[in-house]
Length: 118
Image 1 (cartoon, rainbow, N blue to C red):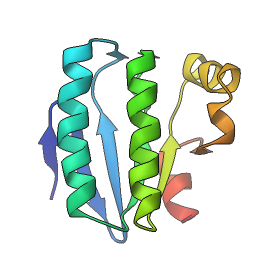
Image 2 (tube, rainbow, N blue to C red):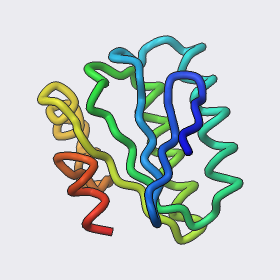
Image 3 (cartoon, rainbow, N blue to C red):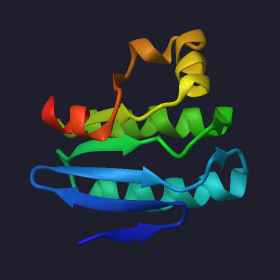
Image 4 (cartoon, rainbow, N blue to C red):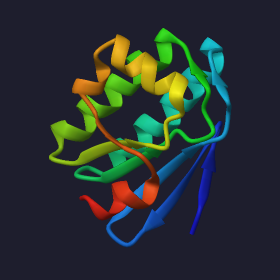
């Protein structure tokens, strides 16, 4: 079963949920607010979730999106869940390296690798 929110879809797989973002550029505050509202609600309803955020379609993000990403990580960890990032292209990898967020997140090359390492 796959469900869709604004800008993302949830794909349950055995003991994890993959969240795939559709937008290549997550820059608009209104769009990010909508994603945050729906994703935060889902995370609240699923405490202890094991989540992979698939960023393979994403090429650019705003600082607002990065702030929300940190918030989702905190929300998941607060309830003993785990959150991994997967599928980042070179530009996002560089951004995460420069901002040192690569030290705060579990980052895997792709969804399959992330799923196998839970």
